[in-house]
Image (cartoon, rainbow over all chains, first blue to last red):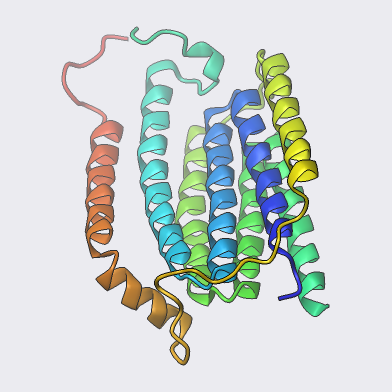
Length: 101
Length: 173
């Protein structure tokens, strides 16, 4: 094992930080969901790296569950985006300031 | 040596593609950058001897989730608008704080020390990666597996209800 575990953690941290910045910075809701996907993938890299280095397969099983939750999140999130677009015909997040309209 | 070369290639492309996802003007370019990132994460999984997850990553993420994103982006016919939110000072503050924290933690703890295998479910030698995952998934993690199927069912019903057009009282506008 020539690549240290720290390298994987640094890579995962970079990707997660990019996702956080994307969620905070972008105004397009689709891009915000894509940034959430980035964060989920960063955690997946962490899980698989630890699973390999600890010789424990439980990490890979948890990646499996994270994938399931990501699929569910995408389905519901995109349905919400379509409903929002029908209501306001925009998906710019600055337009959605009220809980009810 | 060859592992390090592969790791640095995958790491550089993953980092660049994730920055491109956040920075791209066009949402379609963002989605395609995410596709590149998914493929390289799958390659990283292969170098970590998680072949089953690499295949699942490509099939589920690149095959299903990203197609769904592209479908919605093209359905909504988005125009280019202002990219960045007005709260960018707050985003910069959070980002700088996290970077400083990461640097401090790295400097304090140094690089990771070699770890010893303490896992309870160690990988069984002689069986494939997919076989090992299947064994653990259907024995130790059987209940979470069933809960995951329930989550998928709820998400499916929720998506159908949310995206249905005439639900409840018809809106006037």
